[in-house]
Length: 183
Image (tube, rainbow, N blue to C red; front, side, top):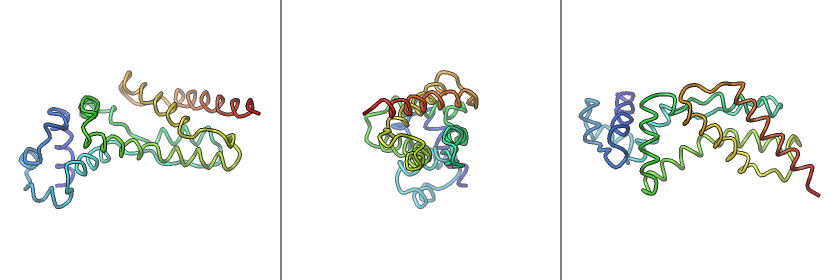
């Protein structure tokens, strides 16, 4: 029942967008009562976040103490919305409807779930001295996730681990060199 509701939520959202997402439609298509949906997910936002989380597993922080490998491995543990046709439809709907407070909450929650593991890796590396103390972790995350997300948007399909490794190496070398260049 749960998987049918979550799958149907993404299908309907991919077709009708967030604004067109109605719990009645999901219940009918999934073959459940709408009260069943509301018991588990009290709001449409909760339902969409659960469906997106089910489709796109956030990365898992991999920590061996080797920053470059840890970041590459962390980014490679994620599955992405853009890897499936349904996911690409949902991403298009979310992008088109930014500015709607509910959509913005969904996007912010999903973004934070996907950034948190890499943030942990970067913050621990900074504490170990692998990154300069002044390294801007949020900026590093913006550059890394922005680059990876752009690649996924422009070239649907799985990420190439070697490409991810080159991106990580490039960003880290800039962060490390920038930390040495400052007085």
